[in-house]
Amino acid sequence: MSRLTSVGGEATRVGTGATQFSTKATLKLADGLKATVAHKVGSQAAVLTLTGKSWEVAHDSAKKDTRLKYKTKVGKSTLVVKQHVPGGKWALVPNPAFELTRGGLLSKDSKLVCSYDFLDRASHAEQTLYGGDDKQHKAWTKWHSKAGASAGIRSKLERGPLLHSAAAAYRAKAGWHLTLKSKFEDGATKVKTTYAVKTDTLTIAAKHKPKIEGDGAQPTLTLAMVVPVTERTDPRVTLGLKWDFCVMAPVHYADLVAEAVAALKERSGSSLKAIQKYIGDKHGKELKSGVISWEQQVKAAVKRMEAKGELVRVKASFRLGEALKKKKPAAKKPKVVKPKAEKKPKADGEKKVKKAAAPKKAAAPKKKTPAKPKKATAAKKTTATKKAAPKPESATKKPAATKKAAKPAAKKPAAKKAAKPAAKK
Image 1: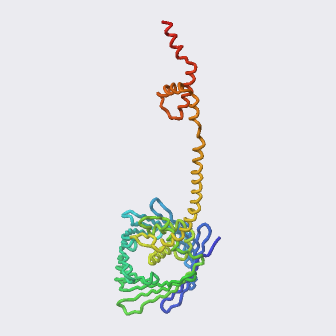
Image 2 (image 1 turned 180 degrees about the horizontal axis):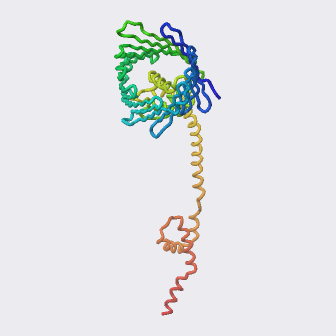
């Protein structure tokens, strides 16, 4: 059965021009399929995207463009095959674009991407290196057959809200670009400032997403402004309003994060990747249909829990804080104590019965063994003691020896045997 999972809308206005409206809806179909419909009111353009586990098909009705995408694993690498059909010209097929991604060649946190597009006759290669905790630093180099070479570095400073990260990039045709990112109010407001040295322009992009509790719509205010530094021209301003609301049941990501950290049971704490992997393996099918990707929701939940003290950061890992540790024993204590209190009296009662039965069994095998040897004569006693002397055994076997000794004493065969050998001589 198909199910509508999210609906969103956006309104943008550039300068004093007309306002443009666009809407977007996502539907979850059977067998893990997902359909997305995006529509622009002004141009009457509609884009339909159908996504599966390893493939994607998108079609733009206005431009008559069709894009196909397939993703698979080849050893330790990831292969992506793309096919673009511009303007409905299917005679150009097949002219695919191949993209191969391989990680861990130069270092543990490195990535190499190589691609070639047969339609545009263009190739490109990119090498990315990461360093620091949680990929705090990034350096990359790129080469494109048409755009030329480029390189850049990025570092997360996290020195107050104004300097969250800084980056510098150089491109052969565009020159140097310097970028600063700022975050305010726990990520609710983000500002990105970029200065292009070659064109001497300053670009400011701001986004504000207020925190709204409940299942209502989530608005997002956007602002983009291009300001020439030396030229005396008016800046170009773009304002936008975007709202998203999800019709699926709300998900408490804090509970999922706490469950993941408790289940992993790592001494040094669990990394963000390990937490996301656990949640994806166990709850991925239920979370992939949201407006915002569940990976971003988990990352935001981890930051909120760290600020509240529910999680404690240990380098790049997280452990449960005291606030969550105190809650868990209170819920588990009644479950553990009740069965122990019921089982203990039963075990004591069984032990008491066994102890009481033990002396009864010891008293039962009593026999009147000392009364039997009293009937024998004094001579029988002496013969029995002589024969029993070379076999020292327990006291309970002595009466049996006296009985065997009494029989030969009555017959007296020893004297007859001694007389026969004397007559032969």
